[in-house]
Amino acid sequence: MQRILSSQLIAHVGETVRIAGHVHRRRLLKSVAFLIVRDAAGLAQVVVTDAAVRAAVETLPEETVVEVVATVVVNATAPAGVELTAPTVRPLGAPAEPPPFDLYRPALTATLPTQLDHAPVALRHPTRSAALRISAAAVAGFRAALDARDFVEIHTPKVVGSSTESGANVFALDWFGRPAYLAQSPQFYKQLMVGVFERVYEVGPVFRAEPHDTVRHLAQYTSLDAELGFVTDHRDVMAVLRDTLAGMLDTVADRAGAALAVLDVAVPEVPAEIPAVHFTNALTIAGAPTDEPDLAPAHERALGEWARAEHGSDFLFVTGYPLAKRPFYTHPDPERPAYSNGFDLLFRGLELVSGGQRLHRHADYLAALTARGEPVEPYAGYVDAFRHGMPPHGGFAIGLERFVARLTGAANVREVTAFPRDLHRLTP
Image (cartoon, rainbow, N blue to C red; front, top):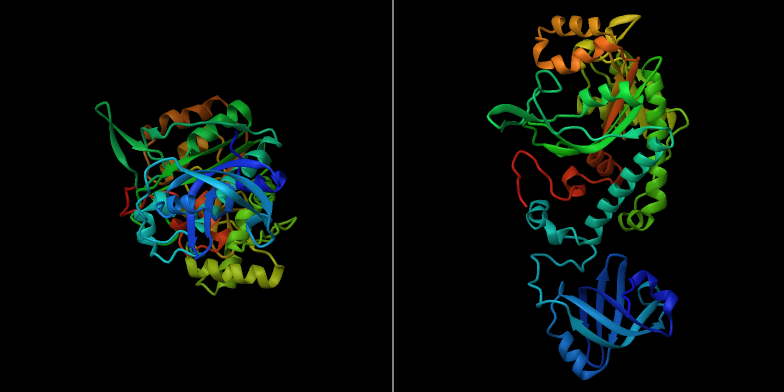
């Protein structure tokens, strides 16, 4: 008999079926026992009246993996409107040791550090697994949106010979006796691949050895990167980003509706045109000094409130950041050379995306590195490619975990990360 999932039981009323999953909860009453089985699709209620079966169920603690063969009957009060009767119950392993928290309760009461210490079982809780389902749907939407626009998915090295962001901290390692680093981003490679495919994207890990210990930073996170050629300026990139975000959220709503319901999350609407403000105006809106070189988290929050109040938007572009605060490959604003053709996208008052137009002429790269006092040699393999002709191009990168945290309202990005890596955590 082929196993079916709990969500399929409604289609088998009156039939004998086989399900399998974890013992989610046992309720042992005087005349009847209820066994709640949890599988990948949800919960199934098993009604036990036979004394021998009840005795067996009493020996199976929560989280024990079991197989149940039983008859499906209608019960409007049971999960999905059906329950299983006249069961046989067979354990598929040894009785489970109870985890240090109750997974059958509506919310996990354990502290976040305790949950992370015991992530393999904490992630079984519906509220934790729901965030990961939303994450998976967001990635599927990212890919689909860009595939539909003739982007090509690429896979770039995660071990590199030089840092991507000049001056940023990197994780060093020994590469057969030579110094090497974990990649901070696929930036150089995705730009070079624009010369091959014109439009490319990548989904992959990136590594930042910056000693942040905040609710919004991880040392390893998943970056959703895109790069496109033959742009006029950064506004072409912003238009593609807008459509990509809309596609991601549409796919989340379509594929992860049950997960959204578990977390009581509504998918926000992406405006047809996301409001945008120049960095200099953003400082004024946020009440920041006019000589501030960057936006602090408090400024971002103030801008998020302004975007919601003035435009009814959860999203806001901030354009024209000072060139000195952007990576050396960022294209300057031709009309205001001290500012860049770069942008950030704020989502509910938090930076979610960085992007912009890149330099594409070899001479401009040499000049940019010289202006910052950077030697060309460490970047030679990257910079030399521009001698052979590259189109005007630009791109963006979305932090997946930060996106999901902001969407779900999680207070800490670690709540939506399966096995986070940060300043203190290398296990499990």
